[in-house]
View 1 (cartoon, chains in turn orange, green):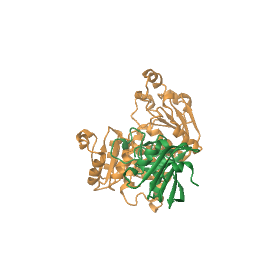
View 2 (cartoon, chains in turn cyan, yellow; view 1 turned 180 degrees about the horizontal axis):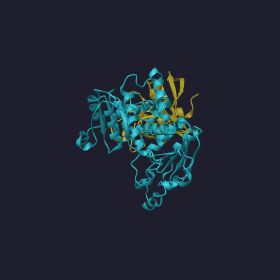
View 3 (cartoon, chains in turn orange, purple; view 1 turned 45 degrees about the horizontal axis):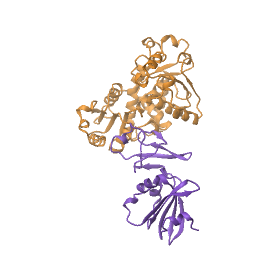
View 4 (tube, helix red, strand yellow; view 1 turned 30 degrees about the horizontal axis):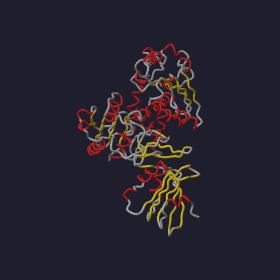
Length: 322
Length: 152
């Protein structure tokens, strides 16, 4: 793995390998593996969680961070091309973490950079570290990734996190339910992908009757700007809001995930239930990102099937039991 | 046997005849192959009768023989095109164009938010046939489209 650009670049085994490494880092989060390395965190558009999570992961690995989170103070505001910015930054650091509003910008950056690039979000296209941390959270809470029943709720049309997660989970024989208003249904190309793989899915517009059989509820934000008619938005916004009272018959092991930030799609009274997992999910992002960075920068770290590997598998199974 | 259409466009002694080009795409094919900068004789005819296409164009390029990779670049807009290699006024080889797996620098990405539409990046698509047309998936933004917008 030279760069991490898209979840499509990953095989099932490569995903599992990163998750194993993440479990090891969760057990031992204070590392000096990357002592002496410098990592660029360049964010061409705003982010709190992703940027801080990546920068924390870098620090926990013993490396240092340089970068920017506002292009106003950089040469980009003078009209510098992305290529020139990336080629320059690549001279300074060992790895680049980049978020950029243009779709495909991360692939392009990886082509022109002389160091590995991690895509921390390229517009509406890909956000692969989010997908890997979602998989890690599912594996950690359910003890498995295979045969998961997942209900995806909210903006399924534009949400890049649900699209990437759908593609990743389709490698693990998942069963899907899609709950969305008619304006924000899962696009046909993703449903075609599931049909092609022979994976069952259901589509509904009602949330409350589709919770009880789920292992995972994956909530997303329904954004007002997606609606042409603001009256339509007002009508649906509360229909996709999860409340504690709706969870009475949920499986005891069911967990609620959300890429965050949430607005009103999960009521605050859900936070204290054993089903709420979104803050732990954000915490899992640290270990997953540590694993991604280490796999890219440490020679041999990404090689599967070593003695250490068997040991780490045992460690992982111990973590699952706790 | 030389048919009536062949007579309408001057014969060449040696070179390549590109047949079954949709008439509407003739000038784009010329552009993609860079023929506007070629100094030897080129003759072409358009709006000729065709049983297959209804209406076709034909291009005859003297003393020019194409590599497969070069000629397959026109598959995007002329997927039914046929090549006749001419030696001493006779057809010695016939080829069909085939759709390349990767198409570089010919089409524009249909996604307005794609990096290739905002930065000086050469476009690159993976191509696959779909019905009578072609589906292109942008190697950068990963969007798939059947709308082919040729830039060169």
